[in-house]
Amino acid sequence: MTSIGVVIVTYRGGETVAVGLDALRCARDKLDANSDVSVVVVDNASRDGTVERIRQTAPWVNLVELPRNVGFAAACNVGIARSQDAGLVVLLNPDVEVRDDFLARVVALEWRSDIAAVGPAVLDGRGQVEQSARGFPSARTGLLGRTSLFARIWPTSPLLRRDLRATPEEGARPVDWVSGACMVVPGERFQSVGPLDSGYFMYWEDADWCRRASYAGYSVIYDPTLVVTHRQGASSRSRSAATIISFHCSALRYWRKHVSRSPVSTTAAAVALGMRCALKLIALGARRTLAGGRRRVEP
Image (cartoon, rainbow, N blue to C red):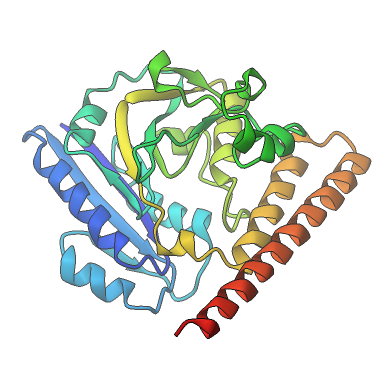
């Protein structure tokens, strides 16, 4: 029997949590009797009705309520520990909807001994491909990464191919890392590679884990025969100053662990990321000021 443990971390997820869990239930119901699925939802002290909503709409999940927000990576590790007997572990964001055949396709995957993880094709709410498969972050990622100005102006540029590798038409293939929004991992790999680094409060923990997997001799596969839809839930849309700061702190942690070769390099990265973070915070404040002004003049 194939056992699958699905791990979902919630934090003020809004209505998308119930929608995602309903899609997961439909996929579970499509499996045959030779497969077993357990779902662990770890709530990071949402205190906004998320826990109550899960209890009402998905009483079949194993719900873990943390007394405080310990961060995404640490909460994932709680769920992974609860799923330690599963042959396969699926890390899944609460705002990701799986297709009816998703779990059946996961069961059918062939796992060579050198594969650490498989990531699906991730579509946004409009059906466009998200860049969920990428090259390992480096200095050029700030200029040519997924959210860079260059990528927005010229998304088809060949210069982006090293960093942005989610091209479903090319089929399944090795990539450096895949997004933790949906990542399938043999349970044993969390023992050989280790859990997620809980030093990342939010962001970059997936790139870090895949990097550590590569150090251990494993490969990561982007497989577009698996497809999910990422609808960017409430917690993603309400991008706060805290999440912007967390993103840049995590980027610096990744740089120090895997890229930096000297204290000078680390200092330069800290300055560059600090400046970028400040610009993002200024832009956020400006958007909120403009939005508040528009609300005041509405009849």
